[in-house]
Image (cartoon, rainbow, N blue to C red; front, side, top):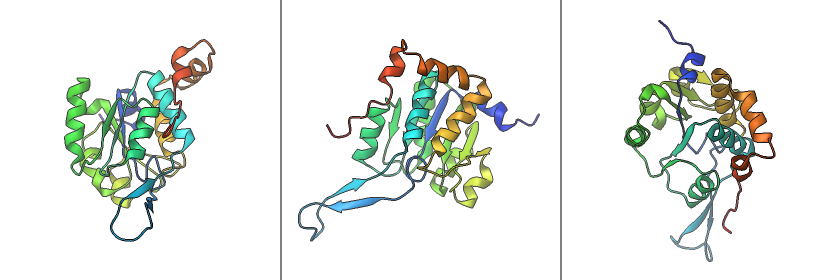
Length: 199
């Protein structure tokens, strides 16, 4: 039996994202500290899409566990993960399969119950084995070739939200989760994505 992308989405319990090029547009801006001379340290700047943040709040409200798996080490990503109350954060991951295996162990789930959103070849080892492989609109051709679903929007411009909406719609809970989020009595929704940045 051949599974559709919707069939695969209905089984998802854990949603993992690459960061650069998926939750951002892929730009990495580094502002040097001090006078800018020499090999000193710099401040890394990334821009995250607010629609993706809202989507992650919806995903968590719908009962999904969410994680970031990225090769780079970035304080910015750590801050964003904290603000969004991300369940799993793995930075400095050249071999992303190792992070996947740790998540499977922590969540006591199978690969078939995991969705992964990626855009570049470093994501291929995970995309090839998870139940729902998602490529962003700006993904490399090799990534799109293995994807079960390709987001309409590119990374940093709503691709993360596209992935979440697709999964929740396939599960038949998108509209009810939105209404739950909008309920003024919902304490969990009130706490979602309270960004504090560096404060």
